[in-house]
Image 1 (cartoon, rainbow, N blue to C red):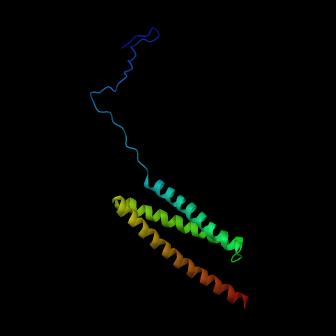
Image 2 (spheres, one colour):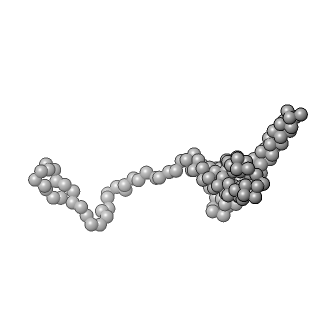
Image 3 (cartoon, rainbow, N blue to C red):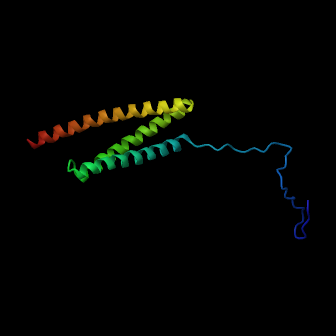
Length: 138
C-alpha cells in the first residue's frame, strides 16, 4: 500500500495481474426477460414479414393487379401476422429448453401453424366482409 500526502488512509496498490481474493466475488447473472425477448422477436418478425410482403405487392402494383392502398393494407396485415407467428414460435422455443436443432424445428412448426390459423381466420373475415358489402350494395 502506498501513502499519498492528501489521504489519511493508505490507497490500494494497482496490480498488473488479477489478484485472487480470499472469498469468491459474486457476479449477478445477466438475464434477458422472456417478455422482452418475445417482444423483440415479434417486432423483428413484423418488420421482416411486412417489408417482404410489401416488396412482393409492389410488383403487383406495377403490373396493375392491385392498388397501392391494397398493397400497403395487405403488407401490414401480413407483417402483423408474421410478428405474432414469430413471437409465438420464439416463446415455444424458449419454454422447451431444447438443443438448437429441436428449437429450430419447433419454431418452424409453430410459426407455420400460427400462420395457417391466421390465414384461415383472415379468409373467413374477408369473405364475410365481401358478402356483407355485396348485400348492402343490392
